[in-house]
Length: 535
Picture 1 (cartoon, rainbow, N blue to C red):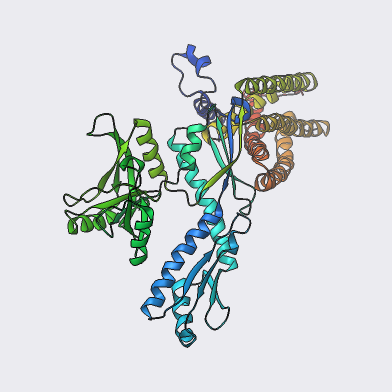
Picture 2 (picture 1 turned 135 degrees about the horizontal axis):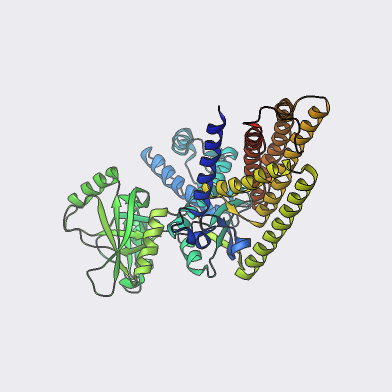
């Protein structure tokens, strides 16, 4: 590779870095306005809000138990097996979520041989079945499945919260699990957000949407009346109507919905036909549209329930076949309809949440942090530049150029990767400067040794870079491995430090070795014989 090609590579890298940091500032006078617009600042630098959320994992175990009860009931009814009662001993806290049990009592002793195979097939491998006595049985979640349920619940909660935050346009926010699955905690950091009240409301909303058939077309005026009707119809459930529909209204709804929120492709707010109100429209997947079309086509003239979080929002009459879309009516404001649409797109939370901590960081603290970080960086770089120029003379300029380019590449990669710059990240940035200088010192000292041994200048430069290469690789690899452990086991702040340091080290390999060597080659080019080197 000739010298011209190497310079083109460096120039292209520099232009790509500038674009990553400031975009395309035009005219050039706007560079100052656009500077750092593409670099995301963390909560400790920009200010904002931090929430610590605890996922109520026991809700997921309760939902699993409720579905299992239905499966057990169906399985034994098909076999003609009677029972006295079926109860769920619900956990009271996150810590004992796995202790949930299903107790089936009063199974005839003569039916025990039929009962075990039937329920074992119904519950699969999730529940262990043990006989308390000849008529009573206990179902308990086995160890491996309880670990899976807890882990999946926390992971799905993190993903759902992330989708909700992204839907609000908070691109710089970070959502991540804190601690282990047993603690079930999620930390949300939102730079620039001073009042997280609306965000808390959106995150806390489960927004489980269902379209279901009414088991009875009439309304019930009391809860007791609806529950009595539900007990007479095992495949149904009694649900309250929305407060907008009037107080004390209940509906009898079939347990198995026709479509749910998981079947949605999109949801958007739209102006209602009724003055002063807004609706939320939604679009279904192909498979759900087919099911929905078959259902509505077969039930024209009847009413169906639109259920949101176990509340019947409305029960409109089906006037014709509906295939792939529908509307939820009754939002008082556009924002209310938009928030509902956002929650439907993000999906329902698998469990409830409790807010353990809400902390706000003022922007003045962030400004102070940035100022102190910049001051420390400038002082550090200035001291390094001074030492390199005094000790290595003209060759020190080479190291300074490589150092500046290293800083530019680091900032650009942070921007391209969408990483958030935090105070620990600034610490990693400053440490990277030290690592970069260390690499140049290794190379320069090797060149000095080669010159003392009697080699010519050009040969000494080539030998110095060649012999220092493996030492640089060794130091960088060991540091990257250490950073990997910091990232795997450290807190979010420590992870920010590790990410910044690793990016800086990768940039340093390019600048300290490739760029620095190109500068030396350029200095040596065009000269017939070089007798000395300012180092």
